[in-house]
Image (cartoon, rainbow, N blue to C red; front, side, top):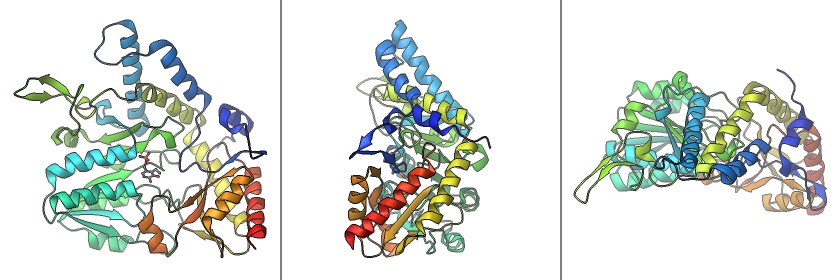
Length: 407
Ligand code: PMP
């Protein structure tokens, strides 16, 4: 793969050029959210400076420009996921919102008492709680695929859990807490064999892995733009047309209707049926620039750089006495969770912050996973395309300082 011009890439992200507590910022919290390149910031400003108007309903020039930019983003997402049709792309407020949409529409319509929903031990709370709410409402049963100590799914156990009662399998593509890449194609094929539909939570996968929803044959795929160099409050639900058409709308309001009378309302076609109200127009428009940014660098090139950082950091961190890496899956992305013997992760996070190093600490919205691993939380460093090995050296030095201060 071509090597990246890191100085140029870092210059694309203006936020990186700052001092935090007197030291150059090291941003290692990319699994929580990535930074935004200039192209995305410019697109947001451009929209508000030139095109701001509500979409779809207006016939004036600004409304037409805003609408066509908005729909161009839908096409860009379609091609990013290799979806068959642009109408299969629903804009949501994020991954959480997209999973809730599926639970509240598909789930409420097609699941009943005793039906089973299968998730995994490493799910983010947003892929647990909506299903628990559905179970409470409809009397369904939530079942959980176990993992091994390295943080990998136990596939034998998965197959045992699949029965004709399994109606939905909802699993994370890449774990935000451990970095594990799950064998989603395999999971999907096995689930389809028992007639279940499959939702893949791609929140952490989209920057690292090429996604082809047709090749995967998943029924739903969801992600958030903000983890992909795009704005917050914007996400995507991909769904197969045949499924989306059978699902009732969730939120009611403008845009999702064909005709409203006080007696009866008819609903719009997909995707608009699921897009009630004025959306995050600017943020949706700017997603296209984020996707272009990724496509221009090339996902393989990004992944190769991130893999180099992962290997470098794994080796470097293991030289620190008393540091234990949590999650050592054979297939993983550039996320390293670790614990330091006798030192609380919050202390680690605070002392690293004093040195200008941003990491995340805690349970990473995966409390059941932490319980399974027998820990209260971890310190997590997650690397993106703009990070460097020099920054990893800073982290290692920073952790030595944590140890000295806490000794
Ligand atoms: N799933 C995973 C794997 C995640 O990492 C996240 C974000 N941390 C979410 C779901 C929820 O995404 P959002 O907060 O953008 O809705």
